[in-house]
Figure 1 (spheres, protein in one colour):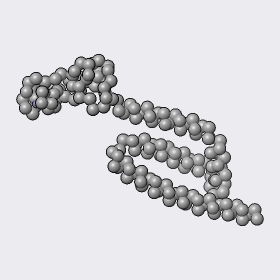
Figure 2: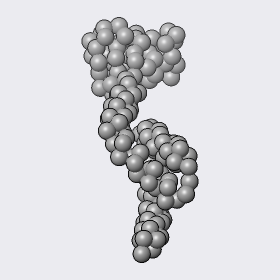
Figure 3: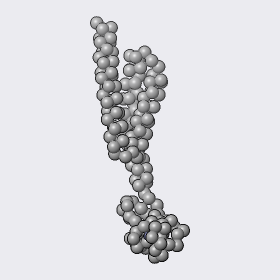
Length: 165
Ligand SMILES: [Zn+2]
Ligand SMILES: [Zn+2]
C-alpha cells in the first residue's frame, strides 16, 4: 500500500503513479518510463524533456507489519495473563523438580518467549528462501529440544515415582 501525500489516497503496492493526481511516486518518468531523479529537467537515460511531476508518498507495508505485530503482542499478552497462574504453578513445580531457583527459571522462560516473538516478527521481513531455511533450522532445533524435554520429563517422572515407591 502506498499513500499519496498530495491527495491522501491509498494505492496498491507496486503502484508507479498516483491514480488521482497522476504524479509518479519514485522520481520523474519520461514517456519511455525511464526513472530520473526528482531534480532532473530531462530524462537522464534518453534526454526526453516530457517528465512526470513527482509526489511524496508513504509506503505503508511496514505499517501493516507493525499492526500485525501489535495484534500478536496483544493476543500473546492476553493469553499469557490468563495462562499466567497455570504457567507459574508449572514453572514452580518444574523448578522444584529440577532443583533450581524458580525465579531463574521464570526469567529464562520469559526470555525465551520474548526472543521467540521477536524472532517470529523479524522473520516476516526476510525473503521467502531465507525464511524457509530459518524455519527448517528452527523446527529441527525444536524437535531436538522436544526429544530432550521428553527424555527429562520421563526421568523426572521416574525419580518422583521412585521416591514415592
Ligand atoms: Zn495523488
Ligand atoms: Zn527516458
